Amino acid sequence: MSRFSATLLMITLGTNVCVASEGDDQATSFAKIYASLCMANIPNLDTLREKLKPIPSLPAEKASLFLAGNPGNAWSVPDKYGTFVLALPNGQIFCALHARRASTETAIKLFTGMVANAPSPFTSTLVKNDQTQSPANGPTQTISYEWSAPNTTRKVLFTLTTTSSESAQLQVLGSAAIISQ
Image (cartoon, rainbow, N blue to C red):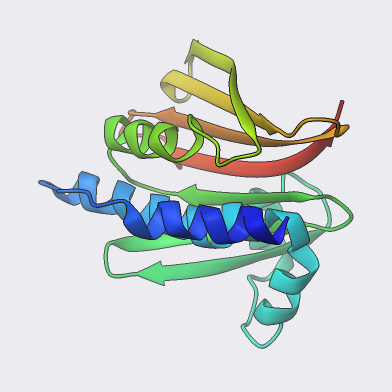
């Protein structure tokens, strides 16, 4: 998986995006943080947890909102375009990044650009592209891609959920997980 991480980092750093608005800037920051924290570290989240130990995590009552009630830790990730929240549930190979505000159109474009074409020897498969209507958040879109390698039983699942509703508490949620077939 180390070749996976190196290739992913090269893809991320090689992405050159021209942004035009605050929402685009927020989406670009989200994509860079998602790639550098979740995508690059999904093969070994314990190493990421060790690196984050010196950084204060959110208090348990605030962290639980980002951990969906699971035990674990969440950290504020400040950036000049906004504050994002990284969540790492305990006992799971799962990483999530939350953005309060961002251009959903730009977030989807950047996410798809990162995960639609997997580095060799992986192949990328679109497994979900659903749009739903939520009373609380309005139109919501979820996109998921799986990366798999030949002769393996594990896959990497990348998921992005967005809502363009200005009243939503979060507009963008990206996750990465290792799953078994």
